[in-house]
Every structure is written in structure tokens, then in C-alpha cells.
Amino acid sequence: MKAFDIKTGNSVPRQKNPVRPESWLMPGGCTDVEPPQFNQDTHSCSFDGSKWVLTAKTEPNPERKPHVKTYAGKRREEYGSVQEQIEFITEKGLESWQKKVTSIKEKYPKPS
Figure 1 (cartoon, rainbow, N blue to C red):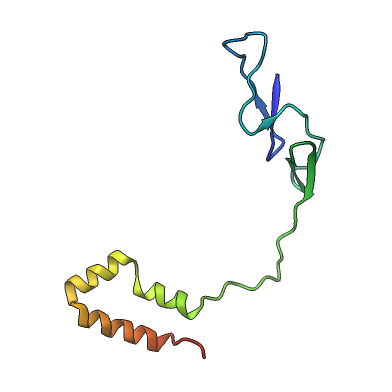
Figure 2 (figure 1 turned 180 degrees about the vertical axis):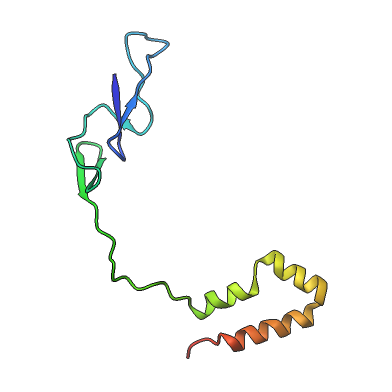
């Protein structure tokens, strides 16, 4: 007896019901409605509760621009993790940390 994953359409094995041996258990997130044949390289298949829906996979856009970090992202990167910040303050003092923050903010100012 087979079941089918509602998010992928893949076959999932079922187990016999230990209480009622004449029936089979349905795994969670599955249906017994068999999906249509489809090419997994070009399409995805999901069950919407009443029927299977095929969706064409989109090709990655080769002209996509690389991610550019914002001033805030660059600042966060230089500040370091919370643990690193606490360690800095513990070892060098709060005034030293405040100077470092000021220099980072000057290096990466907010856009106007």
C-alpha cells in the first residue's frame, strides 16, 4: 500500500494498522491520491487538498546582481557578535568600545 507526500509527490511506504490489521496507517503529510507523471527536473508537484498541482520550476537568473551590503550590514560585521563586543568591553573598557563604535560609524555613515 502506498501513500504520497503532499509536498513532493514522492511515494511513502505505509504500515499496517496494529489495531485493525485489515487496514493501513496513513503517514502524516500524505495522501492516497496518486500524483500525475511529471519531470522532477522541470516541475514540482504538490497536493492542494483536492487535486495535484504541477508548477514549472524557474531557471536561476544569470543576470542577477550580486548582493551588496548596506551600511548597517557592514557596521554589524565590524561590531562582531554580542560575545565579541562584551569581551572587548571587558578587556579594554567601555570608553575604548565607544571609540571603536564611533570610528565604525564614521567609516560606514548612514546615507542621507
